[in-house]
Length: 494
Ligand code: BES
Ligand code: MN
Ligand code: ZN
Image (tube, rainbow, N blue to C red; front, side, top):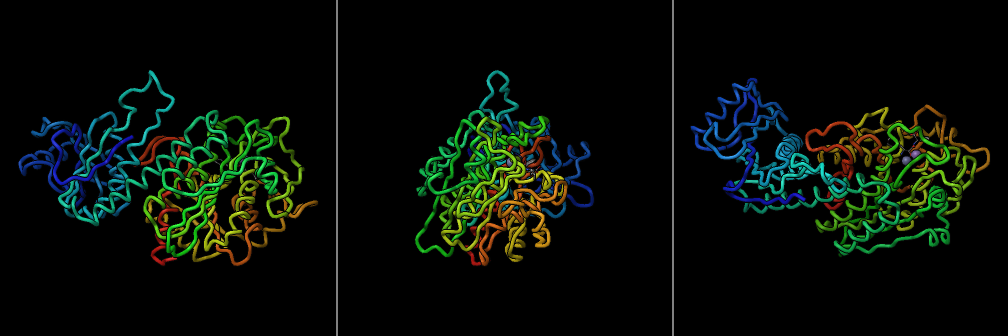
């Protein structure tokens, strides 16, 4: 794990130093000082030779000895008009370029100090590596930089300190979410997600309830039990509660926790099925988001629900055609056992509404159709409340996560009608898959309950190369937006 400190002066022992560069008339200029005026002039001359223009995310590596400095110098562009997300990304580029190093010093100039939090966040997110299962192949190049120092003359400024502290808390939660998504599904049955939640609850003093399969059978959680019954490793429903004194409202966050999704009897094709180890990313996001919210002492009640099951085609597996009973009594005809996320979520959503929270947000890798519609960098947001949906898009963009609204068209609801039960778990095949996922969930939301559904199927797992502060594998998406939404509730913005 990479450590991060906020200090006034550049440390003498940094083996890598990063300085940002802006862009003006297609030419780079340093933001702040990397050395003496003469050394800085040499750096700018070297950048010119390299054809470095300073555009956002552009990286130049300069040997310190060539400009009279020690160690390796990274110059990362932030372009002509950087915003916080630009700094997050460029700091992530620097942290990735510094992998294997002992200490990365990131120099923050006076005109970038407003972005110190963003820089710290991007650096810690970019530094992430997952080496749990590596032995011999664990080369230095694959290891995170050990320590990051954010260097600014404003290191003692209370606002800057608070921003960096928030960044460390949030990035730590995102990286913990990534760890869970990357963990081998062999090692992460539902009971292990519950253990991870237990650890987070202990660390932050949260109340936690873990319902095992017996407790769920007593209470009638037929959705989670049905999905989990094909696995030798039984399901769990986790509820964590954060209740600060004098809270301004109540946010419920509900995560899909399918620890592996084979599709069940409606078996998935083999290509890329291993990526379905990350089908618990929604659950991992909500349990880590509530931990971060508690660590930040946000003055809002939060309850996190993680609906965990392994979707396997064992001899006891549920069949297409089975009718299951959701918590609360509504019946569902399971026409496709691969549409299992909505079956575990419906139980958790009904359960969550018993506490009458002001807002419910569920987070799920729910549909392949969301990947088709929006790709791997934008998540879908569907809601029964226009203001809440717009707010999620805005909170996401401030947090560095992209969401785009999709509709919940009431006139498609009849396509979810079942011949035998209250509702079927799939709509018309090959059409509007993400909308049907949302419409199905909407059936379990009481009128007047403000609710948003985040379909993170695309962004949750990055199977291509690392970029900016996003590594390959689990990304921890949605954690940052959930924390921002909680902050916005405290601020009375929502
Ligand atoms: N976990 C998948 C969705 C998914 C697909 C997530 C690709 C990430 C990447 C989900 O359980 C699923 O299988 N959905 C089906 C629903 C269909 C049967 C209605 C899908 O999208 O094909
Ligand atoms: Mn599925
Ligand atoms: Zn799934």
